[in-house]
Amino acid sequence: MSTPGPAEPADAPAPSPAQPPSSARRPRRFGRRAPGGAHEPDQKKPSLLRELPVLLVVAFVLALLVKTFLVQAFFIPSGSMEQTLHGCPGCTGDRVLVNKVPYWFAGQPSPGDIVVFKGPDTWPAETTVAQPTNIVSKSLLAVGRAVGVAPPSEDDFVKRVIATAGQTVQCCDDQGRVTVDGEPLTEPYIYQDSPLGGGPCQGREFGPVTVPAGRLWVMGDHRSNSADSRCHIDDKYSGTVGVDDVIGKASVIVWPVHRWSWLGSPDPQHPDAQGAAAAGAPYLAGVAGALPVTAAGRLLRTRRRGARPRSRSPRSRWRRSTRDAPPG
Image (cartoon, rainbow, N blue to C red; front, top):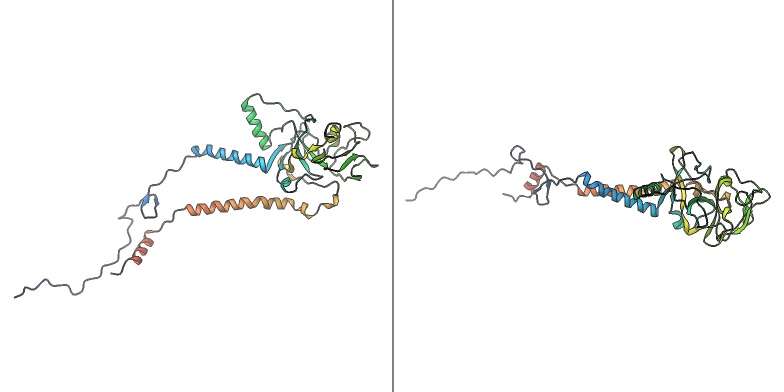
């Protein structure tokens, strides 16, 4: 006689799906979620005081690279370029940005360009700068020259290119104008021209001088107060300066604010050749400057987006686990 076994339930209820975890039953964990699902403890953010020296070093290196290859600020120390550039005694001297890029592609300075250059060893200084006596003062002077708030070196000059290699320059024609290869120049920028018959350097007459290869004939806009190529016509370079000694082209006045303006380069030999390219140069420069800034901003946003941890809500994780679970 068999003993009946335990009664089996007719219909066992199907197991209910797992419910999403409750924040009340599951303590919140702080930190970043690793790819495997485990939490990593928050990393301590670096202190600003620790990052500051690194930022200063990076800023200094970038400034040095920009100064060496792209642009450099200069302080106008004298009045030899009045009234294009202010540098008269007692007034606020202009600060200009000297662009080094144009001569990478165009080759050499052109007539009408305002250039900053290292003067030949035969040129005495136009201004006298007190030399620092200790390492701290020397460092401050170097930084001030880099940003254009300190007087430049005594052998730095700023003048306008009048004639280039192979051209013959002299003064004057029957109207008292400078000529290049026998053609009179159109020079609307001249301020207080030198007097006729004033003698060497102080007067208007000079030449003729044929500019040697690789050199430039330069003059100041303030002709009666400029010790330029005319004053050194008897030296071994015939008053000319080397193309290799040109630091860059003065492009814009950046200080004082009310003097902010682009510096034009009217060609005195061909005054009618200033076309649309010259008129649109400031806009092209603005676009060229905006492109790297925009690219850097886009790259920074992309990196931030890629470094941001991707987190899912508890409900979305529950839905995914339910979807991937094998059927019961």
